[in-house]
Image (cartoon, rainbow, N blue to C red; front, side, top):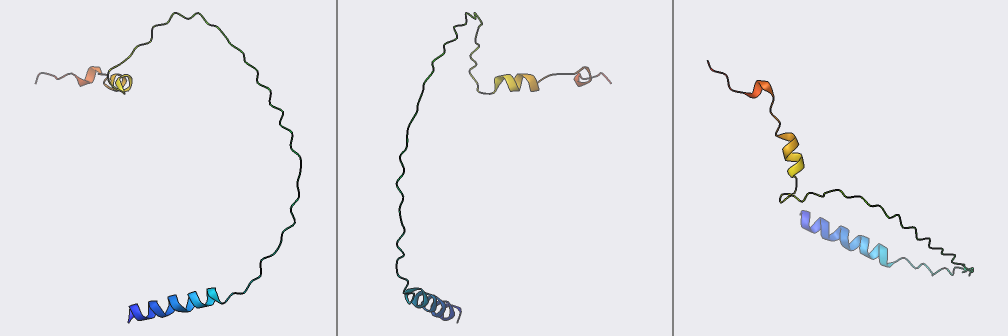
Amino acid sequence: MKAVLTLITVIFFSTVAMAQNNEELKVETITMSVELNIEVKVEKDVKNDNQVARLYMFKNSRVKKALSFKTKKDNAKMA
């Protein structure tokens, strides 16, 4: 019953959509001139920084190192 009702509604809406006889409206187009003003300024700042860049094997090693801190209360106590 559900399939028959679905089929009837699909056929109904498709026939309603095909029955639309709208004529195409013509749109007036306007042409405008466009000027492209592109200026490229290149500024190079030369810095003589002699800093060491560390390369880590693992992706988040800095984060893992920062999160693996130990406090004084983390130590095991003798009972």
